[in-house]
Length: 181
Image (cartoon, rainbow, N blue to C red):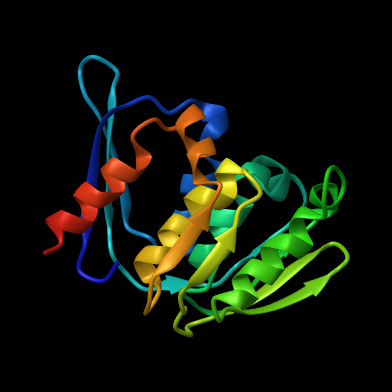
């Protein structure tokens, strides 16, 4: 969010799990990592304008779990953000890509869909709405962030699933919102 700075202390980042942070840095997000004597990391993220990019192939494979959050953040980047090679997300209980695209459009994002990916035209305001997450924690996290960015309220259905991966997520989100006031 404009004018914000968030610090996360005592964080452990495994070398194979840095793809999302590296992508955000590539988009122009000022993210700094500082390691202390004990091996724990402090992560500092500051607000800034984001630039669009393209992700595909092995890079996309490393980001599959973060595609919803990346797509929401891409709505705030200037230009066209392309995410390719996500066909695997179309298989399973439901077409995850089609659902994600429908949810993004529902809140006013400009999104194009094609068989192997999506294109998001960033720089346009997001609107509120009721989001059917289908009990998917990745969608809950992503659209909770969208709720911070939207001009009106976003309501998340089936959001309790996030407790399994991030207990206290909504309490933390509220603290972040409070600290901005």
